[in-house]
Image (tube, rainbow, N blue to C red):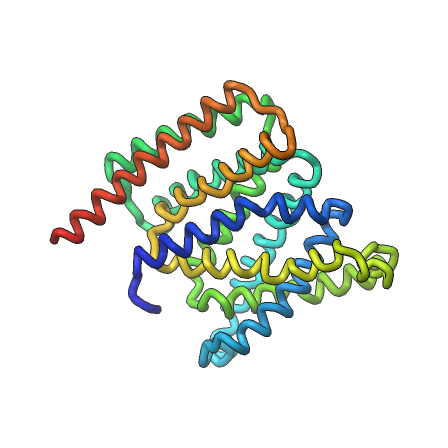
Length: 297
């Protein structure tokens, strides 16, 4: 484990969340392909791309460590199942015009991160950070109230990604090897699905001459690059800080839902948006003050 580098962590975290925030543009490009089939190909091409990347980006000893500690494979199998579930629900939501619910899920997720950090990791918040959490919680509750029912899409996305991040933060496996192992552990299930669905569009020879085929192949780098950034950032930043950076992604999704895909947006959603960004501003101010004190010291 290398020494934590907050500046590097912020750059990696921002990169991951900006890319994730633009994901709807990618999934809309392959909207004709069913969500589950897209996930199967995300697993397939991520496994292949990740293995190729690992050959170039050397991580000496990673396989020997996994063989020495086989329980880590079980941990990665669990985190892989969580991220695959998250992928499936997210793609389904985007391609069924429920991007606002997906956005809400990733607004809730940082609060789940804060809760897990406090309860399981022993992290503590300063006064301004508590104020930031309170402001964000008001905004999230406003959106939950507006939905009018239990937002299952939002809750599944928030919980699966929060526990995925927690497991990967604690797992003593480097970011890229861990991601490659996750996808390879999911690969048998993906291949079995393809064998059991010979009528699926991607199993037809004619499909591979279309633009959708190229988009599916691109699922490998599109999936792995932000996940590598996220897992690396998790090792350099407190989990609560990483959680608040995540507001970037749902905000980008929210803006696309409104201005590009014409999903319904009213003044109550705007109020929620303002509370959440006020919380982010307060939290960012606290982080800046803390870093300034450390620099002066």
